[in-house]
Image 1 (cartoon, protein in one colour):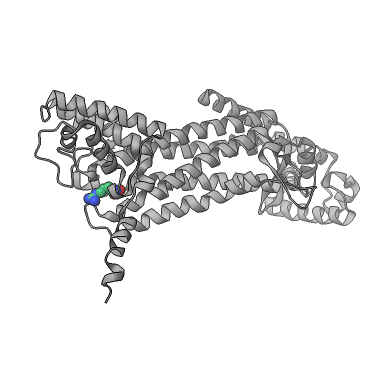
Image 2 (spheres, rainbow, N blue to C red; image 1 turned 180 degrees about the horizontal axis):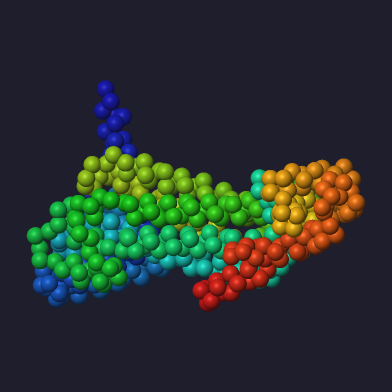
Length: 455
Ligand code: ARG
């Protein structure tokens, strides 16, 4: 009944679900690299003879140039990158090509290629993070003593410095770097030689291949080596946290560049216009950076879900690891570059920052602290009195520093002229000189530390 309809159908569908070449072709250079190391080792241990090894290596080098130049013809019926490269090697050098797969399986091959690829991406991410941190450092240095409102609940809280705010992100991105570094150190073991799952009976030298591929050592359990993808998950988890940091900074850029805030102006190079409203300059790049966390965290959840419940060792489910990681890595690197560009180009508006810092009674805490320090009041009582003074200022529609001393004394008779010294935003930030605090001096100390660290 189904014969006519299904006689070829299932094969085509099988091919469609099974073939990974459309995406794993990105592993081409890593596949050649690990094959070269494997071939050298097979020669050095005498498993293959010298002339076969040199034919294999020559063929692989040619394939690498074809991959790099875009000439390489990928074929879906050869399933994946490993089979495509092996078939091409056979076209080129004939039967010795078949010897390359001695003491190896696609299972340890793909685990090795993929580790090499992820490791390379971590190095890119690290470079992009450093560039972004340098851009933030420059902004911080430029406005080290500029005063802006610091927020909690997005309500004006206390005056802070622009430099301090920029440097907060330097700290976050530096922790991201250290997370990627941890992940890199842990993943830097070579699965090659684990073969299908149990190791091999050939007298291979796993230390040689590990060293050639710049891994710290070979993996110590062949079942584990071919069947875990925790290295990719750690990359995705670190990427998710980093993307979350980017998303928060991007959100601030969106808010700060709005007409209501005017804290910053984004450059034309990183903004777009509206096709209907001529006055608009939209922070599209910031919005897209803000959104990238969706794909990156999605990849993290996606791969975790693929891996959970898989019995040891390899299952084809694991072929679903790559697209997500590729997409997450591309998204993260692009977002980092876009953020670096925006930060480098943006102009902070010193006057608007200061104007905003002066509104919202941002020095109320300084006033309460003064009552504690000078009048020796308990903080709770000082808090209450300050609250009343804020209420009064609100009634009078003026700032705390503009209430007359007489009026203040009506609320607490002990208040003296001296109180006005703490009501200015300049004195407020200057006084917050505890380690890690917002005073320009303290921020400069941190900037100098980071300049030295980043070179
Ligand atoms: N394309 C496969 C993957 O990405 C390679 C490993 C195939 N191994 C196998 N036993 N079928 O997972």
